[in-house]
Image (cartoon, rainbow, N blue to C red; front, side, top):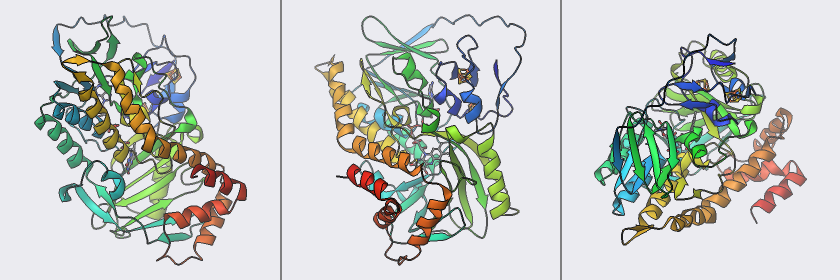
Length: 455
Ligand SMILES: Cc1cc2nc3c(=O)[nH]c(=O)nc-3n(C[C@H](O)[C@H](O)[C@H](O)COP(=O)(O)OP(=O)(O)OC[C@H]3O[C@@H](n4cnc5c(N)ncnc54)[C@H](O)[C@@H]3O)c2cc1C
Ligand code: SF4
Ligand code: SF4
């Protein structure tokens, strides 16, 4: 049977995201339903800190009896999850005049930070303008380090930011409150069900929250989606299992993001170093779930730091997961919507999900409010959200997924030869398009496939 070492578990939810039997859930801590478990070992494989193991069964413990809810709260739109997607959904549904409740498991949002905190100005500006107090660093260059150590500088990049997620997530939730959303913190939703009248009932401890319109923004775990009929678990190859933290070192450049690739450093993913002011940076890596092993992400990160930043101390260590799959279809089902990581709305090449989560949250919240006309709720109206998403970002994300699949076929030798070709270019003129063309021109067939994607 699978057991969890609670002293190691960081409640990051990566294991929940890959469990095909819905045997794992996080309420306050990770819970394992042994009766559902089919011993597939996927969870053990992806855990970044080796907190799960296949161990002998302890003596039978009496099962907790289900608690009967004693309190009820009703509203028009119920949002689960207070990350960027959930906050924006609640904000826009409330601005549209609906009675909104947002339920968040944690006591505070934005902590611990489970993110590299990098966002492109262009992507995020589709939803909002980043205020200066959210910005920890402004990025003007990136450096890509090939498996053989050669460094390619790309100087002609669009402006990007390293944001402070602690400030950003708190501020977004505050904006939702100010717009009228009723926010319940420390309120983990243990289960959701839909009654015969079509309304959703979210159960948290002894409290029941009821609404006809449900927006699930519960992050990478996406577990509640399964209660609502979605088959929301990730294939191993479509999840990046991550280990990350912060370091201080004089080697860090304050306006440059560094990306390391290669099968030794980060198989099927990459390692990032994103500066956060003078001499400090977010550092982390993601590896493809099918190339992971128990505790491998943490081990690789420690090895890298020892080799590249000898003496540096890794602070604020955490782990997490990024879904790198096509977004979930349908996004809308029987009066409920998925947004953000819960919907798999992530750029599959760089693992960035903040900008998508913000935009999807805004779209879903706006559509939820519009779905009530004359006080009557029309669940079919929610399909507008899926159409909007599919039209622009949906297509873009499918391309990023297809490109990721192609890049996974590249071994270290190919990556080294691409670096060699890019080093012949003028770094001041090098931009993402040029990198893309060079990358795929090494393989005419892949180039053709990549080209077809952008027709
Ligand atoms: C290691 C790592 C690095 C990353 N780096 C970047 C980056 O540099 N740039 C970028 O753009 N993206 C990055 N991402 C992705 C980005 O963090 C996510 O795409 C983004 O946070 C998604 O927002 P969300 O609101 O959908 O989910 P989340 O931010 O995960 O929020 C989900 C919320 O739901 C709550 N919740 C979950 N279950 C329940 C429940 N049952 N009841 C109540 N509440 C619940 C959680 O507590 C959480 O607050 C990274 C992700 C990881 C893991
Ligand atoms: S994957 Fe995350 S939630 Fe699951 S056991 Fe490991 S640390 Fe805990
Ligand atoms: S992932 Fe597999 S082994 Fe782990 S809890 Fe789920 S069914 Fe059991």
